Length: 325
View (cartoon, rainbow, N blue to C red):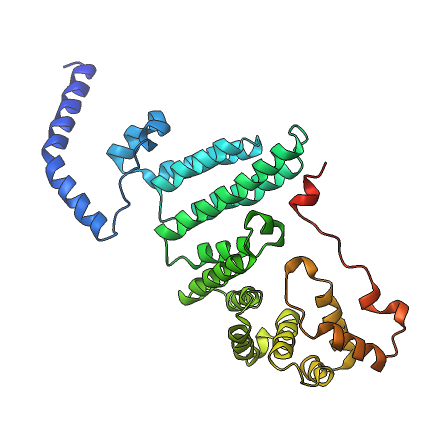
């Protein structure tokens, strides 16, 4: 018997055996998907996009392997700045491996950060087109990470990535309602912390977001005091916001004395509050800060021409400036 005849017989046997197994395997696959032990079926259109590799995915169960190879393809598109191809490729990758958080985070970062940053400086487009492309990239990244979270609600890193995006001062203009945006960021960080797997910074990041929501000052103050009870949480930002929120809650308190209590010395209090005063781009509250800085300047004999209150604040920085020319 010739080799091609043997191969033909083997191929027919495999097909017949496979056909006999199909009803059983289809039932088993449905049961495994219902128990979240097997990835969902490919979305309509994904098989066509994959092309010649689709047979391996459908017949061999090699989704994760194909996803890894497609991730390499996406990196090639990234190097060539082919942003739509990058985004489309990650759409296919996460269809193949929906429970691999890395792919969701990578696809999100490429759209919301890499592509968005590219359009800020793309000299081939007019300012208005650059701005539209920047905005579309940021929002596409947001939509992608939202999908990732829906597929992986227990992945703390995806929740934290959403919180980071929503509190990124370079992205504020993409989300026009500050209170809604910071509320969503605080909730994202809260959900990340609730998994019990997140790093320590996540709870502080939740507080930093909540402190910027108008009308949530009391909630933020309660959280600040709780965090402050653990010494490792006493970052300059947390200490300053604790002071600011207490000043809001108790307008008549001795603010200078309280600032020195929190920071240790008048010099340290002045340094921290001065830095906070200059952080205008981050939209942190500044209740009581100017008054306390004036008091500390008198105590430290700082002349008026050296006063931080007489120094220019950082200029605006964002899409209105990036795309003005």
